[in-house]
Image 1 (cartoon, rainbow, N blue to C red):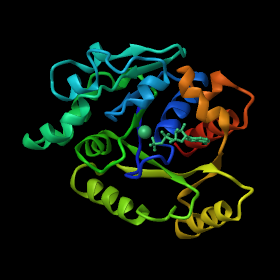
Image 2 (cartoon, protein in one colour):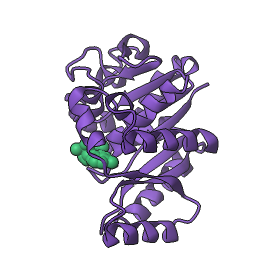
Image 3 (cartoon, protein in one colour):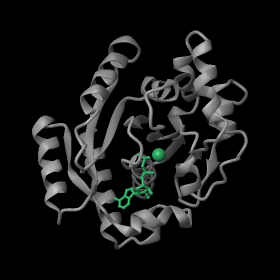
Length: 252
Ligand code: ADP
Ligand code: MG
């Protein structure tokens, strides 16, 4: 059965989508059948893999019970990487889901039929702790928390860990934190180095050794509809995401 990773942080712009797309691509490249599920109404992961954001059926249809997960899968240009695309309509699910009892298990239930086909399933969460993220956390085995090394790096992390503990207690006892991932790191600045030190000091053992550098190849690759390992395999960004994928796989 595939291991399910949610990439979550309620802060926007910390590198969730970039991490979801690039870790998924690296794992597929390493030979594993991999599925990326985009559950952010912004559909950035979908578009970043060259798939239009009005694909149907999509993950909204799956959450609403209008489609099975199987029918909504699309192939990507990357071998062994499938996508369950997002749609802007997902924004409505934030209103619709809470009206129905048990709706926090929709994604988990939808995945039951396809989990066997994938070694890894990566969930790209929206920048909130609303119903869509809760669905992801209930379906997940592990969480990766991207953290940008900036002045407010620690802000919100304690709250996020509290939420993860609550979901674990109430809804999903399997859930564990795989690690915090330092992203968009600019090792030349004292500020970024201080932020890294702070996060490592506050959460020893929880922070991945691999740090993702700020890298223009990473930033421009979504506009080409592909992950950085295909956009520029020799870039520092591609190397970092390969190293991270190895570290994630090694942590099990
Ligand atoms: P989130 O999904 O958490 O909102 P994104 O992954 O979309 O964050 O990243 C926010 C922005 O930062 C995007 O424009 C993305 O291309 C850019 N970005 C992410 N990681 C890097 C990086 N390592 N180097 C440079 N730019 C990055
Ligand atoms: Mg995103």
